[in-house]
Structure formats: structure tokens, C-alpha cells
Image 1 (cartoon, rainbow over the protein chains, first blue to last red):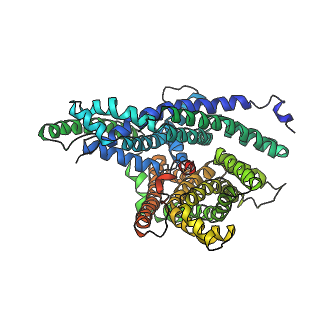
Image 2: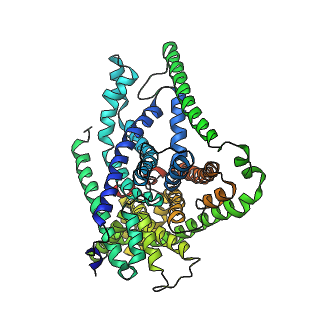
Image 3: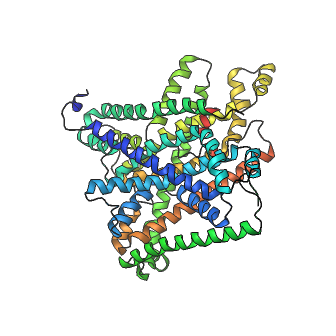
Length: 224
Length: 296
């Protein structure tokens, strides 16, 4: 039943490795971009708040598929931006990371913002009474507590990101979903076996992430 | 304005805010100027690339509107099927019998862990001529609906479960006291209240479904809104303007749905139709994970 795995024709592990890489690069990128966005959305400068709100609302309501295809068709093929990549494979991968980061950043931002709201006002008031500036209050007092409070929501964002990397298949990044599509076309008799293999792969990727980060979230939560 | 992070700005802080605003405007302007000049270089700013969307009604009647209709059709149908199916799964997960609870729980967790694209591909392969013989012109549509239903019924199951669990214990206690059976308690007392509480979450889930139809357009040849970009830019060679307009349509539709869900949430919170907490927009908006709703 699973003999298509032994034929050596399909590199299932390699495809999942690309999925993992896409997830990791996009996770780091969207964590940084999401934090910057969250900083803007809570800042005292109205213009920055406005930009943050507009960005989050616009990008959240756009399909991820459109963002990634836009990166490929618009940025790369029309405007000629290659993000420093030279081969088709490299460029596709980097464009996918860009699209995933732009999209996931908004969800990281919203998770962080709700985390900032869990910090009691007294904390910030005390910090201000000590004479700390907005930036110091944010980075020394509020964000460390907020980050610990939002590990569980961020874990959900990470799991969703892992699943969303499959959309990169639309611009030809050789990750798990693209290989699955190819295998379903070539091995129609092994439909259920192929699906089982890839489903298992994703369960193995997402389940431990959720359990591990759920455990971490309980460990580091600020007891109040 | 004051918040957790800062006091109402005084004269000094106001001046500083102006400086920051100025810096941001300059930076944003530079990025915008760079993007626009690059687009201008490649001819994407020429008037004839943008004017078809205003002057040529055929762009709308042949491509954009039929695409939008397909998107809405697939989304609405998937929602209609996933709703009762998801409600059943959610009730099954709350069952007192381990032999129901266990398998249903496994089913829900499994389909929530699989990317919706893979479910669509699976559905597409399942409808191959050899197996189910779905006509090739409607096959992408049904594959997309299948994928969306399998995934979103699992998410809705979690929303339903959260809605029922959010109701106070007194509700089922009272139902027991007047002699209702378990099934009666569930269908006459708990579910009606839970459904009201869940409405905002369900409406916002529709946004997720609409966004996900775009995957089917890109990989299965489903003729939805996003897939129209190829045909329009093939005719007018205006890739970037087309993508802009399509993105705008998605944003308008989805933003409308989200606002409606928030409005509904506000009304429900005030009207007290339900005794439980309202399962709000933000409880399930997490990129289609439905994750927050599970943890109550």
C-alpha cells in the first residue's frame, strides 16, 4: 500500500523540511514585524496608531493566497524584485516568506496587543512614577509581561502559520502540499495512503508545538 | 487620550509626537516614492492600465463579478453544510458516552490539524472520474466546498462546544429539575442559547471561509475572484492594478462581514438573550485555527 514511498521518486522528508524552514523563517519574521506593529498600535503618536490599525485591518481581510501570488506576480515578475535570490527555487522561497510574514505579522500584533491589555494599569503607573519614558515602560515593564501572557495565543498563530505555509505551493515552492498534489496526480490508486502520509506529517508538526508551548505558557504565566 | 502606557500628552510630549509623526511621514513617503517610481518604470502606473476598471464595464461583468459570485457561492454553501455538521460534532464531543466523545474528539482534532489546502486536494482526487465521476467543470467547486466543510465543521464544532460550556451550570440543573431528558436539555435549553452566543463568531468564520476559497482558485482551477487576475491581466496586461482591485473587493466584503459580526456581538451583549458569555469575534479570528474557542 505504501510502496510509492520506497520508489525513491518522491522526497517526502525533503518536502516537509522545506515546510519546516518556511515556518521557522516566517515565524521569526512575523514575530519581529508583529512586535513593531503592536508597538505602533499602542504608541502615543496618533499617526503611527492609524497606520498600524489600517495595516492590520487591510492585510487581515486579504486572502493569504492573494498576498503570496501578489508577491510572485506583482513584485517579482512585474517589478523584478528578487530579494537577492538567484534561482527560481530561492526566489520563490523568499517571496513566500515575505508574504507569510506580512500576513502573520498582523495576527502576532493583535495577540500582543491583547497581551498588553492584560497588564494592570498600576504597573505602568508605577513605572511612570519612577520617571521611565514611554519606550522604557513598553520594553522594560509592559512587553515582558505581555509576552508571557500571550505564549498560548502565539502558539496558535504558529500552528496556523505551519498550516498556512502550504499556500506557498501556489507559487511553486516545493513544500509538502505541492508534493502531495503531484503524488495524487501520479498515484491515483494510492489516494488514501498519500493523504494519510501527509496528514500524519502535519499532525506530527503541529501537535508537539501546541503541547510544548501550552506547557511553557503555564510555566511562565505571571501569577496575579 | 490616556492609556496603560502613557498619560495624556502635555505640551512637550505633543511637540515630540509631531516630530515622530514627521519622521514617519518622511519614511513612509520614501518607501511609497520608491514603490511608485518602480511601478512607473515598468509602466504599471499608466492610465490605460487602471482605467478599464472605471470605463470598461466588461471587466466587471465578465470577470470580477462572476468571480465574486463563485467565491460567495462556495463560501455560503460550505457554511450551510458545515454549520449543522459542526453542531453535531460539537454536541458529540460533549457526550456523556466515552465511545461517542472519543472518536468525535479525534475526528475534530485531526481535521483541525490538517491544512485546508490538503483537504481540498484530497477532495479533488476523490472526485476523479474513476472514483466518483463528478463532471470536470464542477469538480473544482465541489473539491473546494468539501475541503472547506471538512475543515470548518471541525472549527465550528469547537465554537459550539465553547458556546455550550460558557452557559451557567444552573441552566442544565434547572432543566433536570423539571424532568427534561439529556437530549431535551441539549436541544431545548442549551443549544438555542449557545447558538445566539456564537453568532458573532460564526459570522466572522465566514470571512475565513471566503479567504480560503482563493486557495482553490490558485491550485485547483476553481473560477473564483482571485483566479480572475490571470484573465484580466492577460487582456489588459495590468498585473498590479488588477491585484489591487481584487484585494480591494476582498477587503470591502470581509471588512463588512467583520463589522457586522462586531455589531451583532455588541447587540447580543446588551440584549441578554443568552445567559452565557458571548463567544466573540476575536475568539475565533485566529487565522482559521478556531484555537481560542477550544480552551474554555
